Amino acid sequence: MKILYVCDCLPTFVLNEIIELKNHGHEMFILANDSSKLYKAVHGPIVMKNGLDKQFQRFFIVKNRKQKYVTFFQKLLADIFAHPQCATKACWKLLRNYSNLKCGVIDYLDIRSFFDLGIDIIHSPFSTPRMIDKVYLLSKILNTPFTLCFRAHDLYYGNNMNEHIRRSAVIEKAAQIITIAGYNRDFLKKNLAIKKDIEIIHSAIDPKSFQTKGASRSPNSIIAVGRLDDQKGVIYLIKACQILHAREIEYKCTIIGDGPEKESCQKFIAERRIPNMHLIDYLPNEAVKEHLDRATVFVLPCEIASDGRRDILANALKEAMAMQIPVITSKMCGIEELVDDGVNGMLVPPQSPEALADAIETLIKNPERGKTMGIEGRKKIERHFNIETEVQKLQNILRQAVSRTTIHTLP
Image (cartoon, rainbow, N blue to C red; front, side, top):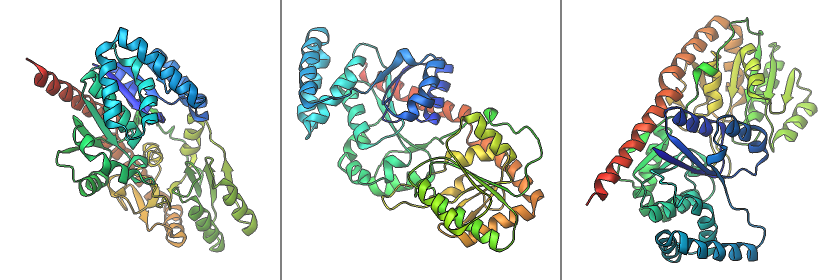
């Protein structure tokens, strides 16, 4: 199949999904934003390494209003001669479907490169309202099925759900609606009144890429990895370490990541003189794995941010579990689908440094229990969050969608 991924951001786990589909023999195309620092530093080299750069179309960058409209009319005029049917359809859809024509103009400039590529199916791995508009426009122009996947940010951030409600009829037209967790499926059913089945395909990792070297772990070593913002709740880990220090429990805490909360976290640590706290900027993946391989416990004290952002089965937890580290995280947002409390990790109430300190102390004082949890955690990832099995599910869904559309359009 010729599969087109349309997404604003292009995180590592989506890139890994694309690469896995490519390894299954599919021809992959990408329409995405490549202007972020993270893309240029991390994701761009992955795109190049896996031969995806020739199929990578970048979002159109608007310098000013005049440039946008001049370019639009130039490209539209060229397309009327080169692709008259597509150009005519596009004009009709822009006038009919877009209350904000400037968004329609940008979408047209983004998607026109795919008019003559014979795309079989269009997939949105992050279905924000704007990505849904872009995908739907191209789907109608090419008469090509589309699928939508909802993860976290695209559902819960800001006004996204209200915008989705306005697009509920379009969402229902998707050949398949996909999400990454049962928690999301229930949320979608309740808030969008979706009648069709919603498939669950977990955001997955490659367990083979997360192999512990079997060396002895540093005793009393706590680690957290992730963006330092309010939804990660790192401040509660710092407060938990303050409690551990007051209890005279020995520990060493390493927090890897960057973000808007970093300065306030550093200030909190300094003002209260909390010892053995190490904040490190983002590291290459292999360096992060080395830190994980030495840790006693992984902590991610998530919370729901004031603007609605939240983690849904965070990939950082999966990577730690694959490295056989017992995890401690907040009991919220259907996390039980990933972490079985007392089996492969421990769940605590969100925003509770005291409960967090209790759980950390339990695992520090019972290393054998932590080791058993780590082994069980790896088993959970191999069975239920393995990229090979999850991409196989996705591949089957995409094939079925193409097949149904082909049968439907036969004379």
